[in-house]
Length: 230
Ligand code: IPE
Ligand code: IPE
Ligand code: MG
Image 1 (cartoon, rainbow, N blue to C red):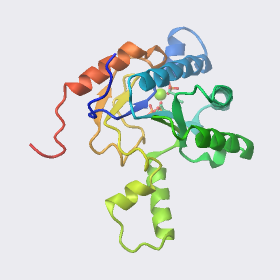
Image 2: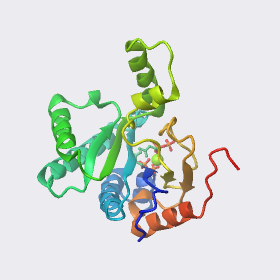
Image 3: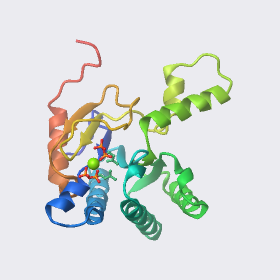
């Protein structure tokens, strides 16, 4: 366990991939893979809070994931509701600022109101947890531009764009981890990934744990970030 106190690694983003394959390997339905994936996510949040990370952004459901069978989508939505219930119950002890990023218009009013209330009540926690749900990088950039156009701005700077993104409060990730073996971004944090260090692992998301995160962090610390310099 490495306490992240030197300021080099403040924000980690994770593409939590491989739940379906994890289940398939065990002859189980994909829905079970998502359930174990949700547990890996819970443990990851706890651990990130312990090591003093400032922001964790997790890709939970993409704008493209609606293409999946209805049964699977429903099971993911049920897990989300379960997680929201849990956060409400443990709100005093919940270790992070619970913050959703993505288009929440798909949720019913009741669920949205509950989420907003948890967000409001956890705002001051030291770790920002961005849960990317119904999230797509292109859609995020498009809504940012719509917002800037509506504000009547004639000239747009990079700061304006960054400020209109869902991540305006916590900035860009230093490290993006993708589990599940595929080496692609899948429409995640397209703008914010500009200078992120990328780390890919074959580990399937439900098997991801503290040791795997330590490995990714150690790997991050072995790299030299140049940001275009020498
Ligand atoms: C990631 O696991 C979870 C979501 C995309 C919701 P997958 O369900 O994509 O798992 P694989 O990639 O099919 O194994
Ligand atoms: C990316 O995984 C989205 C999430 C982890 C939520 P996918 O499984 O949807 O990505 P592709 O389809 O392999 O690119
Ligand atoms: Mg996948």
